Length: 334
Ligand code: ADP
Image 1 (spheres, rainbow, N blue to C red):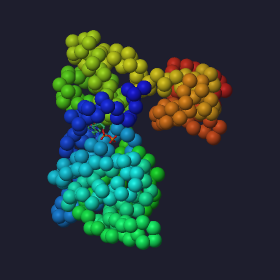
Image 2 (image 1 turned 90 degrees about the vertical axis):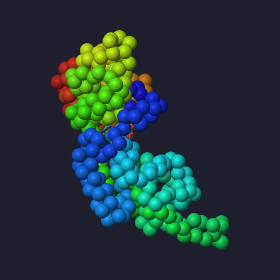
Image 3 (image 1 turned 30 degrees about the vertical axis):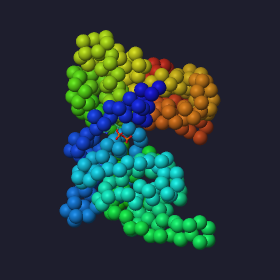
Image 4 (image 1 turned 90 degrees about the horizontal axis):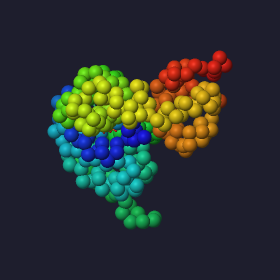
């Protein structure tokens, strides 16, 4: 399953540092975000000020961490990294904020998962570069204001809608990251192949790109699996045949669907005649938890146009029937 998951596993973390573009000009795709960001950074530099705080929203694996690193590099600033789940109390955030250096970039990943009490503290820090440290307890407690160094916050979230509006409003720039086009993934794959020192044929790059679910992290991961296959079963060259054979072995199909995705589609089409069917019924029929089907398989199937969510349940689209090589019954619900 992990092969087409957009979340990073240990293997990804070990290699991603080496594959990350280091400058804005090397960052592939997301042209609008890149141009807007470049403007924000350059105008701040011209004025000799720290840039506005930046919020990046979008699914995992699309380059949010990479962009945060690039922002720091472009500013010639150092980068501090933390995440929402690591901030359980406002004291955790105070400890980070009060030790920032002037001009530093603070990357706060999964910002929507930060503890609520810390949010208030972050508002003040973002706006006034100040933290109010509470001293004492109960009625005698007092807030002691502490100035902190001007910094730039780069927040990342997969769920912009979950951010409280007062937090969202304190970002001067919001970058919406979108899934990548296959040609962009091809460019990323060619670049990664160069860094990994492997011989990736152009047709193979196109093949892998098409199966990568619009996500650079998945593209880089599939590339490494194809490389493994080429080393064991071939002469090390990543040709189209090798790529196809490797991806077949790993059960990642032409559209980037894996075994679970296909099992869900198959059940929906064959057992439930294309639906509508409730998600939990569908999950039981493939022997999975509802949550797994809902959070792991369904989002991509919906995004790819194979499944539609209706008030009466999940329905297969004509594309689903044709992708699975099946003919819809005349009474199929589209
Ligand atoms: P996120 O923080 O959104 O989950 P990351 O920044 O960790 O994603 O990116 C995941 C991997 O994908 C990194 O190894 C990075 O090299 C690669 N990547 C992401 N976006 C790009 C891009 N635009 N160009 C090249 N490589 C990218």
